Image (cartoon, rainbow, N blue to C red):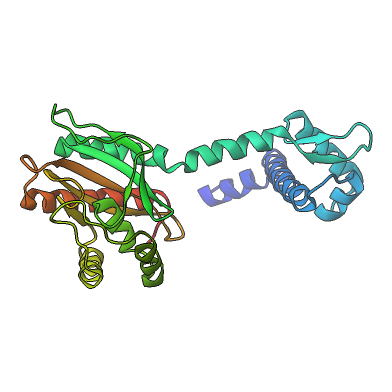
Length: 275
């Protein structure tokens, strides 16, 4: 008997057929359980066994066993008065875990640490909120001379690398609204305060993929930043690396900008961005 014939015999044996049926049954059960969760979510309230059975297209006894199994795991709960089922606390726990996973700080932290290791300067994670930039995480430089900043600190967008990186990615109408509301106030002699010059500057930021704060917010400090996008392509934040001008020359700021841009692109890809 050749090898092909032996394979056919093994495939057709009762034991193999039984395992295949058992495997298929388990897969169907998983699919039915997921469909039951979807149905209970769509109801927005309780649902009886008969309703669930009809939604799944199965016998009432099958739906009853399925719901009982899901109840034992906490995925659904049963109202003792009505006898109907609703989503259980285990679903809430899973949702909470997923929301924690989507927290940009969790994803960004390794990239902040990597940038600090490569540059030995301070790295910030920030987001745009009501036209201003807010720091939401930070990893300090190992040097004693550092930037004065803290998580929760709010700064203007137009004079910071973080802000300019994010503004460059927004629709022009939204940028105009932010500038009209907050203005282009000067913080140092290097702050760009002319609207036309600022928009031309944003165009350059879009082309090179990162922004530089050349002592525009604080004298003696330079910064480079780039944006983070999620799976939909939306900007969800930005990362910057900041250091004193005595360590970060204009040329080094450009080099750091490339490092930050590349790190943010890798971070964006980890969030599902395909652009």
